[in-house]
Length: 146
Image 1 (cartoon, helix red, strand yellow):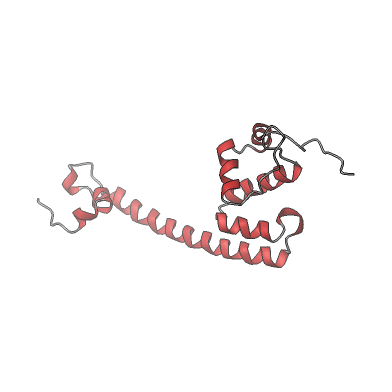
Image 2 (cartoon, helix red, strand yellow):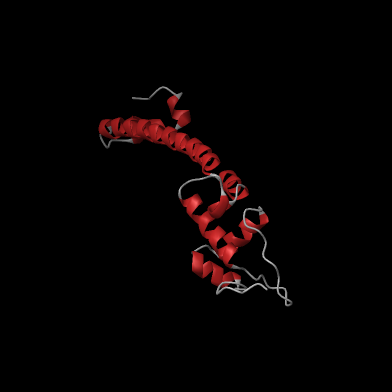
């Protein structure tokens, strides 16, 4: 006989409150098969359990840390927070870390570029604005009228 926990059979609104995930996001995660669909009550309402709450919190935290939906699905397919083999989780996390480092490198390049442009900007009219030169692709290809 299964003993019901405090979070078995709870509504989507309560799951949302417990996890901080919006109701529409919960439904979206179900549609894209990231979160297993809960059973329905006789009246047709979703009846979530403690596993749904835990998986949803896991999904939310993974997304906050920048893991892609595909990576989160992989982690969940491996067993999620309870059963995923550390070696395989490490591979996914290692790939994600490489992506983060590449983005940090790109952001540092962008920072240097914008820093130079802002320093060159004298606050004069648009045709001589270095920041607008960077942002306006068409402008880069046109000679300046001075």
